[in-house]
Amino acid sequence: MAGRKSDFTLTTLDDLFSTQEQRDDEKLSKIRDIPLEEIDDFPDHPFQVREDEDMFQLVESVKERGVITPATVRQKEDGRYELISGHRRKKACELAGFETLRCEVVDLDRDEATILMVESNFQRSQILPSEKAFAYKMRLDAMKRQAGRPKRENGVPVGHDSLTGKSRELLAAETTDSNTQIQRYVRLTNLVPELLEFVDEGKMKMRPAVELSYLDEDSQRDLVDEIDLNDCTPSHDQTIRMRKFFEEGRLTPEAIQAIMSEEKPNQREKIVLRGDRVRSLIPKTVPLNQTEEYVCKALEHYNKFLRNRAERDSR
Image (cartoon, rainbow, N blue to C red; front, side, top):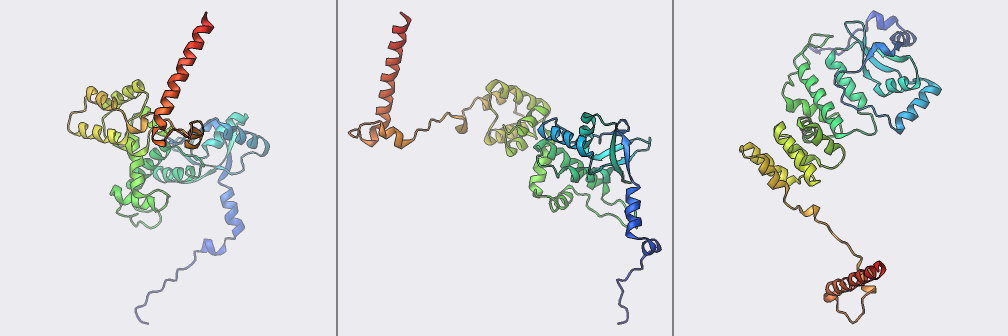
């Protein structure tokens, strides 16, 4: 047994003689009602606070029962407070006419606060792609800054995860998105607001948007103009060619216009007719392979009938 190291660690005197009630009281001592005017939103907070139906329901709940779960803040050097989680609760209190917000004050540095802010807001039921994109970027940046920085408790470095890929792997292990998907989300932060809005609205898919994120701002804005003019967004294949042209120095406004003027298969208008309904209106003597010709002739005769009737009515 010689040389064997024990995993046994001594309990500190504070832990030994403190009760659960005392520890609960210590936590409660950090919860207080703070004037709303002393609370600043988190810098560059990526999550929107919408005044929608959910917000109006939250306002009614706050009016009836108050803020059940305290918001989380940290105190800044100037004495004011920085909101980490609870932006919707803060807005609800403002709309409800309250002057204070019940908060838990935590001792965190900026990077620790950023990580907690992202984690807490990921509990929302609905998150836009743009919100997730900037949230992932903020958290990855914080993780990279923490890499190699000593922990407060024991001075041991947090790790050697300075590489972006390693940070993404750690983050992917904590979320439902893969390493690759996180990388794609972060790429979206390079889009101009107009293109990012297309993604949020579902008018543009993720992969075409990622290809466009490699274009410079001028090229992206030239594309926005073409999208507005053509009333359609580019396909994945078109965005791949735009990126290739850009990397070769050939993506001029004229090139973007030429690519966008192409007809895309998924934008060709399709007319779908139920076969059983069409066949029920066609005489059985008409062969199946002549159905299209019969329908077209029938439509020609019907259009002629409508024109003649319109002429009679106009007399």
